[in-house]
Image (tube, rainbow, N blue to C red; front, side, top):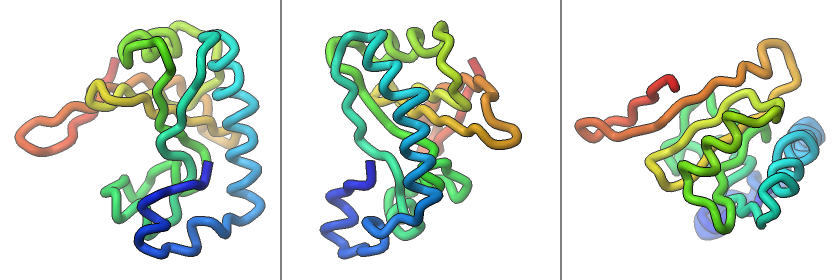
Length: 138
């Protein structure tokens, strides 16, 4: 959940020195979202990106408000499911997610936030328009 080939390549050592709050957020994300998703899908869940340190998030052009910075989000794909299928599976589930974003039909971004304002069940689609990322409410 903290591994990053980009951080290794660029020698962002802080990527691998997460504080206890970030580790706990990642643990909660796994308990409440990723493991239940794996069990309901009966397939492997592959996380492409979990926690990102500030420099890594900037390097990958992540939002400055990204929940990845707090260890509250993961970008994933699920073996045997199309991106659209897993997006709809999550939207129609009882998972206590904060956000699910179908990103460019390439991966799913999902977040868990047990703090104030969490559990929004926000459903979005990220698309490119004129070279800019636009988020459409579903």
